[in-house]
Image (cartoon, rainbow, N blue to C red; front, side):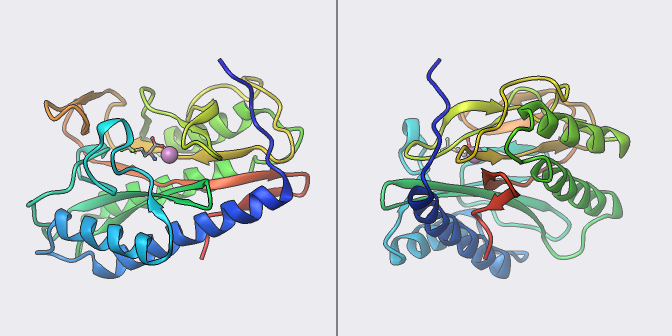
Length: 250
Ligand code: MF3
Ligand code: CO
């Protein structure tokens, strides 16, 4: 258990550059998501795009992870390993990207529709995006971390979906994973008070069915136990006394 690191204004400006590279990378991916493209092709595009911007793909070789993006389809929740699999019309695909720029990390994710998807999958994506925003809206100096968690959980469950418990968001800075953990469930009074300069990766993973997840034999890919789809949105957000400063925006 280490302490929560507060970043200086200069640190946050560097993190904004890292975050912007991540945001542009996700926009590039979104423009290329279509039936027939393989997850490996998308990963290669991510790797090239990040390196062309003088940054380093943060996930490649992280604890042995073999790729530069995590690409997770339908019932895959997070940490899907890209490869020869081609996207198909009607799937939803979650893409998670990290970059290191000048020593600092940016981390963001989004879920995209492949062609036309069912109304229920579209609603899952919309609600998950709104859950992330509801959490971000609680980011302010003096608020409790649990206000973020409770806001995410409250919205997800009011909409009839469930919140993954086994995986959480995190502090971020010169390391990808710093204190504190950022659960997507809990009570408004839980956790530490948010101080100015703390930077959080808030990343709700919301399931259409039950919240339980398990790991596949590849050792990385998390899937829902009931096989129903899951969505994931993530931003890197700095705490200020005027509220959230989202660092992974275009
Ligand atoms: N956004 C994910 C996380 O914060 C990305 C890590 S994937 C890994 O944990 F492959 F790098 F492990
Ligand atoms: Co993250």
